Image 1 (tube, rainbow, N blue to C red):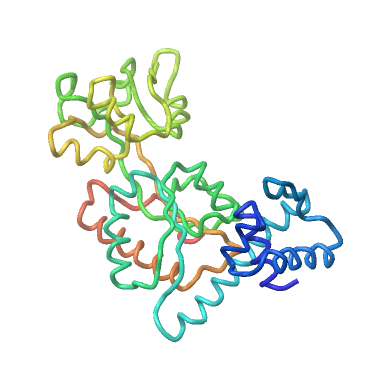
Image 2 (image 1 turned 180 degrees about the vertical axis):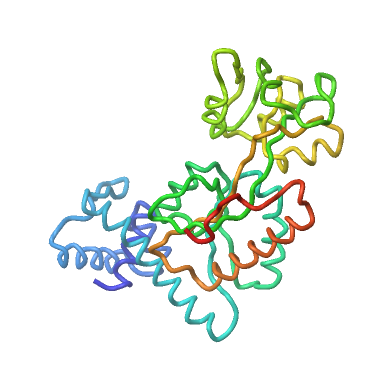
Length: 308
């Protein structure tokens, strides 16, 4: 088994057809079919079921397709790493992040990084912690920024910052001033928030303190529009609502005791590429700068380990 056979097999799986894969690889269809048969003979199993509409993976073929993707990616990373030693960082960084991190600093950071290292490309995945962690563990991402508490024994964690949570709503409905709010003041309000806040609200709740969630989910854009239209009050990280509050589209105030913590994560069993290592250093430098410039917005995570 060699990388060429694995690459050919991966292309067949990706296109779902030997004919289409042959065109993409610029080889003849019989030659490609022969490579796949050689792979099946070497392994002693059938990898593909062939039919008129294309191909279907067997159980063994499904396993090989998953492992082949990982092996081919590792081989490409190794080539990029070796070539980078003699020049500048190259290759793809598969980067996942929570939506509020993108609005806080990630977009500007990536733009500056690409200007500095034009041979690097990004595959971005914006989502919420559970999905990002799953993709990282399945080797679909190289690096993520997500909630600090989402640690896993197979992941390496680097703490970044803690950020206060704000309550925000349409100006015409805002019943509070600018002073920090106590959690008790949120009781009974129609709240809109991400999924991860449900447990936090449940822990604060009691028989005398009821939190009423009218929208719970990971649809940041839709929830933001609902808040602007006066459907309820948005409970979110300060950076998520800062722009709308600055423009006067929303009014808001921080909530005492409500804090979200962010950390960087990567697979502990996958050595990062040079491009990823360089990007990690840029992230850490950007966060340190932000904490100095906006100490009321961002601060260090209390009692955080620096490289769990």
